[in-house]
Image (cartoon, rainbow, N blue to C red; front, side):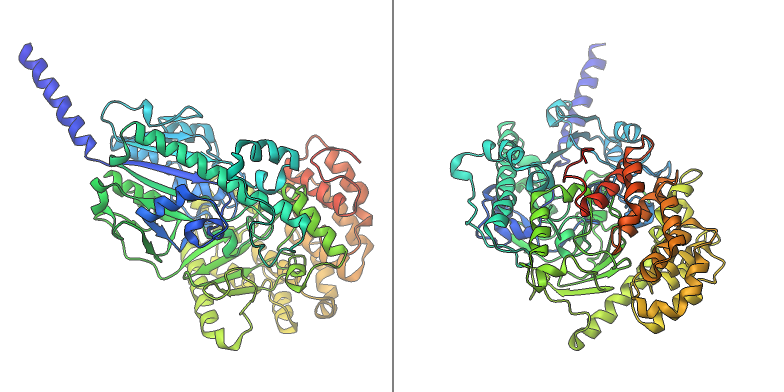
Length: 631
């Protein structure tokens, strides 16, 4: 018996020693922050010494990109390892199912012996999120951390800091911001309203500076809290055995950043620190290394599994960044942007790090489109006031105008994305290359988000969007994309092709044909008035409502107005939301005021439909800029 006990003890000690050879992994995520506002990325006005020190002694990535520009799609890609345009999870705070074989990647780390903890945000766009979270994490709570693991057990711990979230930088009213941020900062850490340079796309005025100082102070508070966490790690004698990843979940939470499919929305600060014990695991070396290697969030799940010695499931197609299974660096990546809260949109972006090419499929909506969570922010209200008062320069005013179908920015020369090169003769080779890369990726990935969200919701009643897209009979992507790739382009020749696509037997082809026509001007639409009015009777509701929106805007048809009122009151909330978004950008809103007042009072209306109706009424000055029900 003594021999058996001794053998068991030795075995336990051996297993503990073996497990300790695996690195601990700490993820520090913070919210809504672009590298533009971090010291180690060149901003001399920022106060981010903790993040800067990690970069000074670790590896700083200059070309790290979130897969989307708002939090829940990004976090869903992080946890599943799936691009949202393959899984159908790109719509902010949706609950469409993923296949049963898809697990949160920490589930596989548990199988490799890791203790997994999450403190505390999840925000995953999956059905049955509680079960999904429970399976992925040993513990997910505001008490979770490495301190609850077994002795000697390696850990994977996530800590998320919300202090730089858009709520603090723009959406809270000013007294809330002071309480949440300024009052938490020592006086010496506070950044004054004249202590930084303003981005050129925002007016440099005392009113705007008061609001924009929130960005710098919120990031400073975040940096302080990251420092406190690292002090605890050191106090627990774990710095020498823990690899640290420190990064933001997507771009800056200000107008034109978060929710927008441009570089400012996607690019994130991203730093990795290796302790001496594990410095050989870094393919980039360590000690203040700066790499321009392209990475996006699809790469992180397989990379963590490789670090942990866990099996990487076949459905994860991202790169492995670290270790023996490291895969070849990419020369470009394709990322995406869809609906954010009540603001619908559709953007695909290709970047090689230097150039950022964005394809806008619904460019009749501006960059500063109506999203209620942003409209209640004082900075957005000030921007709209300055627009009305004629105080904005052409760049600043452009945020409120229809977008072009394509953006092309050279970030090496134009950090703030002020000059669109899509029509620049000298940039046409780059433009053509990136167009081709986008076309190839859409077809290869069978991008399921080329279905309207109305269709995604219907599909999700019986299967998953991920699986549905793999059947070409159901989802003839080449046929659909032929129509979709015209959407947003303007001109008589394009309009004629779109009208021809309206004759298709495929619902989704007709949807993209009519959606494309929404971006054409009245002159281009005039020859096709009969075809558009015929489409108002289309059996597929997204086609009928979009045709009605075009007919109302361009031809002032009273029957179109009644159709739209009916769609506002439709029991299908996706159709109601789509309709309201179209009407936010028509010139005469008055016929729809009563319907908007009714729909926001309905108990059956979803948050997004109510928020969109409030945006509509708010644009007419009929409700205050709050979430309330006041007239």
